[in-house]
Length: 125
Ligand SMILES: [Zn+2]
Image 1: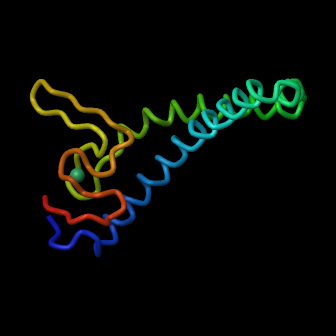
Image 2: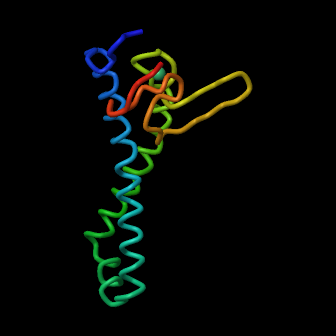
Image 3: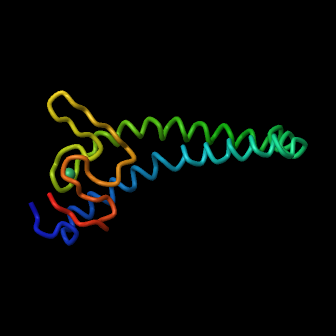
């Protein structure tokens, strides 16, 4: 185990890879939720404008592409659980301890050793 993990290039490269895959996975889902809520609000409070945007062909194409991206990113979410922590070598987003099983793709630090994703907290293995 490294004494100062944030100066280790391998650990920093591993953490940036985890951050990249998480961004690819989470961003389309977030965009889908924001667009859906925005369209819902628009159709609720300004129905004429909301209906016009909803029935425009450009919005329909964008909406379908957003759904496709969200489905792909949902599948990428399964790849996230396979990613290993660069410090401890165990799964970053999965902790198995006997019969208990914890799974969190939104966690901010390794579920096994506590290595923070951003490297901003104190790391105590
Ligand atoms: Zn770890």
